[in-house]
Image 1 (cartoon, one colour):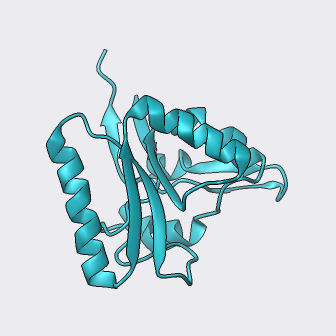
Image 2 (cartoon, rainbow, N blue to C red):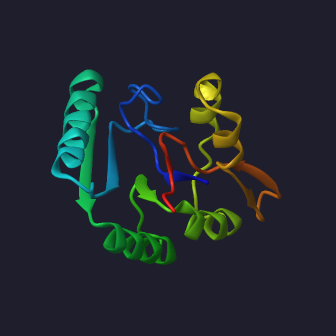
Length: 149
């Protein structure tokens, strides 16, 4: 079983230096806290490298999994959302919010990186939007992991 992550890896090979559909030079990011300090350190370095390379500014917050999940649901409910949420377990948030037209279609990011992504990753990134009456990409897959059992 594979799990994908809800979000966009700003500054990685999938999105360097690219902010989806953005004319602005800044973005806000909520990042899930790593299980070890080195994960958070690597994320901070990724942001610093991206800012240096692109000239864009990333305002980011790193928070624990449960707190981030609750904050993401609250933000999607009240409409005060960041530009990017990187959270494991998108299946609990994405389908309903794509259906309700509360997410940004990131097809432009996916199309520019399609040859680098597996068919499974692509299939798991598409959700139905009831307003637009079509399936589209609302998740940029940038990591997968196995579930131990």
